[in-house]
Amino acid sequence: MHEQTISLRNLLLVVFVLTGLALTACGPETLVVGLEPTPTPILRSYVNDTYGFSFRYPETWTLAEEPHLLTVSRGSLTLSIAYGWAASPGFNPLGGRTGMPAGDLIYGDKVVFLEKTIPAQVLQYERQDKMVFYDGTGLIEVDDLVFSIWLEDRKSDYAELDIPQERQAEAKDVLESFTRIEATGAPPALAPTAIPVVEQVPTPSANKDVLTYVNEDYQFALLYPSSWELEEIPAGQEVPGGQSATAVHLTKGTLRLAIQVRRPDETTVLGVGSPPASEIEERGTLRILGHEIPRQVLMHDGKVKSIFIGDRFEDLELYAQLDGGVDGEAAYEAVDMAASDQAAMEAILNSLHRTGELKTFGPETLTYENASYGFSFQYPASWTVQEIPGETVEDDVKLADAVVIRQGVFAIVVQYQRKSDPAQIAWGGDLVPGGLGYAEATLGEPVTLLGEEKYKNVWAYDGGVKAIEVNTTGKYADLILSITLADTSARFIQDAEAATIPDSAIAALDQVLRSFVLAQ
Figure 1 (cartoon, rainbow, N blue to C red):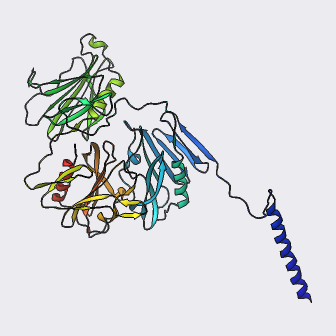
Figure 2 (figure 1 turned 180 degrees about the vertical axis):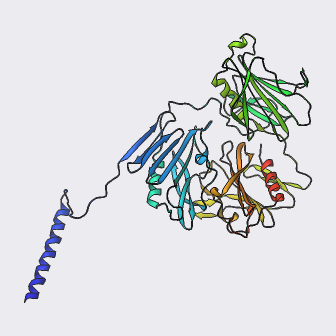
Figure 3 (figure 1 turned 135 degrees about the vertical axis):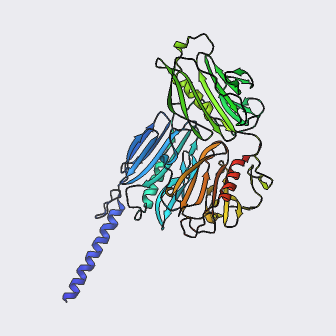
C-alpha cells in the first residue's frame, strides 16, 4: 500500500508539470524555467570616410587602427585588414611579411566582400587550421580600392593552434558586412592601369587623362599625364664628354623631366647637367623596372632644385632628371620643387615597363601559345609540355587550368585563371608538392610578370633550392598566374627525397618568366 501511494504521487507530479508547461506555451508571455536565451552580440560600427567604406564587428572583438591597417581581435586571434588606393596602395600585402608558417593552403569557404565573391583559403598543418587568407596572398581589388586580408594567431603555440570554426564564421560576418560609402579622399591622379602594349606613337590609355609613350628602338614604354608635353630628343648632340644619349623630355610649365637611355655597348653620354652652387642629398628610393634606386636631390638654401636617378636594367641603361625653372623666366634662387612635382616624377617612372619582340634564347627554344586565355611564352625544346584542365574539387570550386613544362622529375607548373571569372578557383592540387609554407621561403630576385613587379619566393633546404614560385594578382590584366618550379615527384617540399633544383631548370623558369606575354 505504501508503494502504491508513492507511485500515485509521482504520477500526479508528472501530470501537474506537463499541464503547466502546456498552459504556459499557449500564452504570449511564455516563461520556461531553467532555459536562458543565447544573448545576441552587440555589433559595433567602423567608418572610414577618407577611403569610403564601413563595416560592423561584434563587441566581443576589439578594433585597433594604424595607417593603412585595421586589426579586429578576439583574444590572441587577429583579423588584419590592410587597405589603400588601387593606384597607390601604401601598404605591402600580408603586412609586408615574406613568409608564412608551414602548411598547405586548401579551399575553406567563399566570402562575399563588397559584392565581390572571394575564397577563404585555410592554411592547414596536421589537420589543424593555422591561418586564413582571403582571396589568397595577393591584393583584393574593388573599384578604386585594394585590400589584403588575413586571420591569424601569432601568440599561441603553433603546434597546438587550431582556429575554431566559430571564430572563422565571425570573421566572415565582419567581412561580409563591408559596404561602400562616399569617400572624402581621392586616389592619386596618375594611376597606371593599362597592360603594356606596343605602339609607335603616344596613344590615349584606358584613363583619358593618361597617355602612353612607347619607344620601339629601346623597347620600353611609360605612362604620363596628358597635361604634360612630350618631346623625343635624338642622340648625337655635343655635350661635355661626347655626344648625348637618346632622350624623352616631359614638360609642364617650368618643370622638365628628362629621361635618357642607351644600350651598354653605346658610347653616348648620360646626364643632362645641373646648376652650380648646390649640394647632393640622398632621399629614399624609387622603384623602377623591379629595381630600388636611390633618389638623389640637389639642394640649395634649403630648396629642392633638381632630382635625378640612374641605373642599368639588363640591356638598358637609364638616367632621369627632374628640373624646375627650365623656361628661363624664374630665377634659380626661387626654384623649389613641390612635393606634388616630385610625386608626378615618381608616378611616371613607376609606370616604366619593357616592351618589344620576344627575346630569343637560342635555336633550341620553342613557343607555347594558349589561344583560349591569350598568352604565350618560350621554353627549352628539351622540355615537354602538357595542358591539364583543372578538376572540380568541391561543388562549384575547381582547380585552375594549368600547362606543365617538364624535364625528368622537375616541372614548371603554370596555373592560370581569369580575374573576371566569377567561379571559385583554387591553386595547387597534385601538380605541385605540399608544404610550400611562406615562412620557410625567402625573397629571391625581382621579376616583372604581366606588368607587375614581383619577387621570386624561394624555398631552400639542406643547402639547395627546392622550389621557386612567382604569383601575380591581375593588377594590369584579366589574368592571374601562379608559376612554380619544383621536384614534382616529392610529396612534400620538406621531404629529404625532394631533389635540389639544378641551374638549368632555374634558367628554364627564367626563360618562361621573361618571355611571358599577352596576345595583342
